[in-house]
Length: 318
Image (cartoon, rainbow, N blue to C red; front, top):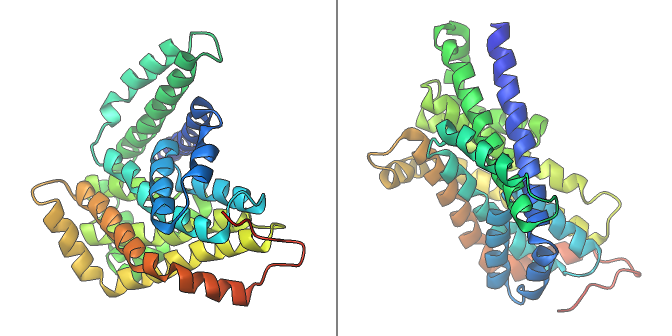
């Protein structure tokens, strides 16, 4: 049992390291262009959402994009309304990683690592070396998933683990588990990935996997809220909007849990359960953005009345 836990933790550490490394390496490969794109293409709520989607797909981390947005709001480069659109777009953009994970590409991880390592042999700051670091990080990420998957396979023979995992089939219990796991490991992508691994190995059903995914969306808010500490009121409002957006979306997701499960099954008809979880992740976030995008002016008024800007904090007008 100790060896199983140790191997699973090793896979998780590799995955978490790769998520952070991939985000940093992609940012280095893009140079200073990511903040420029964000600043230059957020003139309205729809373009802000689109930029949030694109940058999150590129950086492979919604938390990184939202924290970057909070930093830019704190620096008065962006205003609160622009930030709200980016936050919502980041929630959609993060679903791209779950779609990739659902492809079961872990078996090809060593090949990616080999290619990336070879490209890193070039001079450190060349474009080829930077791309090599990105490829290497992707390989480590998939290898971490592969390691976790193989580590948990023997747990089929452990009755207590199966009984515990069955409890997550209750949507509320599953959501709390997802939120707590994400709170501990500080990565919603890792939590969703673990739910997919457990589904692939037969420990979780589709309902349990989707419930854990919903909870992960709430757990990820802690990182962005920490980024607002000692920041401006505009930055604080951005972090609180992220929390409100996720909280309302999760409540609606739990209320409409059965339709969400059925819709994800329909989209993934004939496909694997982990693919259905990826579809549910996408549907959930798109539905939340569709609901909130028309409410941005009212949300802005609400937060401005609740938390008015301090006298020395004049919001940027773009």
